Structure formats: C-alpha cells, structure tokens
Image (cartoon, rainbow, N blue to C red; front, side, top):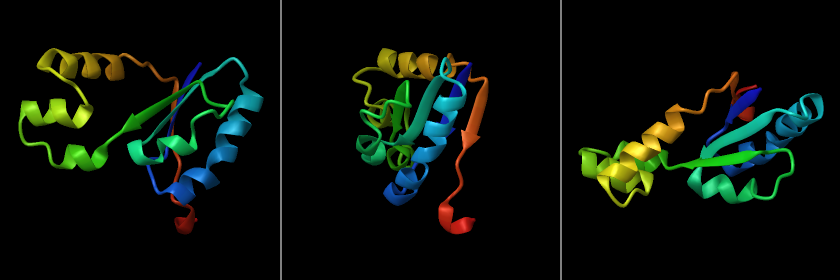
Length: 107
C-alpha cells in the first residue's frame, strides 16, 4: 500500500502531525509512507523512521510560475527535460491513500 500524507507547512503543524505517521507505520508496517511537505519544513522530517519518503515541494515558487522555464526553475530542474521527468515521477506515484492533515488551529 502506498500512502501519501500532505501537510505542507507550518513547522509547528508538521511537528504536531508526526504522530499520524507513527500511528500509520505501527498499523501498516509494510506500507510505503510518503510525506509531501514544503521544502523549508522538510528538514524536520528527515531521519524519521516512520517515513519511507519525504517529497519536498516549493509551493511559493509555483505561485510565481509564468512560463515553462519558470516551471523548471520552481521544480529545481536544470532543463526542460528535467521538468518533464519531475512531472512523470510525481504523477507515477500511485498512492492507495492520500491523507491531507488539517491545520491544528482549525480543529
């Protein structure tokens, strides 16, 4: 089973959501557990044994995208072919479950 957790930011909410990853890992030890997180908060998740993968994204950069070349820059690609490779890799992850973790101040 492939599970994608989506909690992009803020750093406090990412930290408070860590028990979700631990509970999923305890319940589903064979699952591939990926966490999609804002690039600047990704460091908090590095080394977490519950996670199989950390997928850092730069949504602030994406908001400034106006051209194909800007997409390459926002995704960290060094060429147009890298941009298409990024899209292919991200769209080929077939998640069985995608869980968006809400902001804790909204609960």
